[in-house]
Image (cartoon, rainbow, N blue to C red; front, side, top):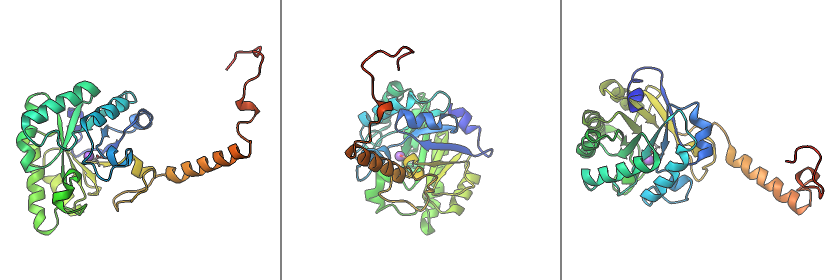
Length: 268
Ligand code: KIV
Ligand code: NA
């Protein structure tokens, strides 16, 4: 529940990852406090150049898959670009659809001060909102690239954005790609949990894109990503071995094939 996440402010750090599929969700259900169906799925699962091309339909399909893999962790789902910015009414219509069709317990949307009115509108109508400030990838074309946010003159704006979403009623806020000292300052000054990605160990919680931390997404590696596994390399090696064995007629072996007669013991 969003209230359980909110209550973790200042305590044991909140653990979260993104997930896009049922098996991934199953892997993290016992270990994460919440799981985010992030619109990063456009880049890491669908090969899009940015998150801008992600649709409501894509979010719903992946949200439904993730929900089937979770029994304990809360599910938060991203509102895709173009589904909420126009008006609070548009945001509510699409947030309600995401929650109703996927079972997500909350939505996440990008933006600070300028989204505060929308966040308050959603929260007043039963939609828990996780906010996302700092580097907001859906605004990449106006931010001028994936730069660190909240440096120098940007520091006061970042702080104001975090305060605005907290006051609007968001139950937590993602801080993406901001100076560590700013993440620590915001964590101290706002009343809701901060969830860092490229932020600071002082945040109230952390999130990473699961394909990044498992080494499955290798097109590029942001500085803030730690690879806890190298599944992309291991997976390709496994596929290469399979290809060799097929071409050498070593696979399938006899244990992978079926006899003509029904075996006496329970057939598999
Ligand atoms: O889409 C995503 O994966 C995200 C997280 C990085 C916070 O928004
Ligand atoms: Na996102």
